Image 1 (tube, one colour):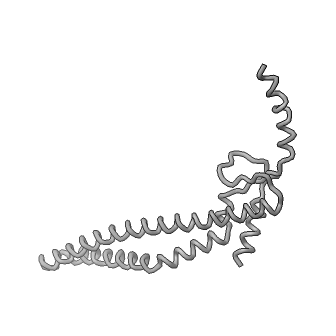
Image 2 (tube, one colour; image 1 turned 135 degrees about the horizontal axis):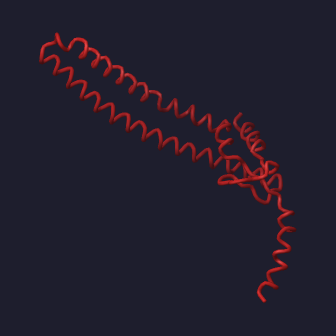
Length: 164
């Protein structure tokens, strides 16, 4: 008895679906090619360049101390060898701590920037959807979509225009 009431709804579903204007955006491609994502990466590199240089300088210093200890350790006095060994141990400890802090800070900032870019992209998709009369645009989590529904290039073109 319930089936009789549901049948007209099921028969009408293809007609309703045929009237929908659908689209999807390839999120991975968009994040790889969007100028805003590239700009964020450049900004992060610049923001963290000084700290990265400091880490590389510390690594170079540690390697030089280690090389010196290996090369000249046999001819050094015991006190000089201990002094260099203690300095190397301290420098290595500081480097590990600084590298960990660097990674954590970089990851936190990268996540913040990704969230900003993602929000901007969603705003652009929303605007395109309204302007072009889409009923539904899929952005993330698509297992399969007909290539005819893809509007990634439209969104990317708009993002490129907005980055200038």
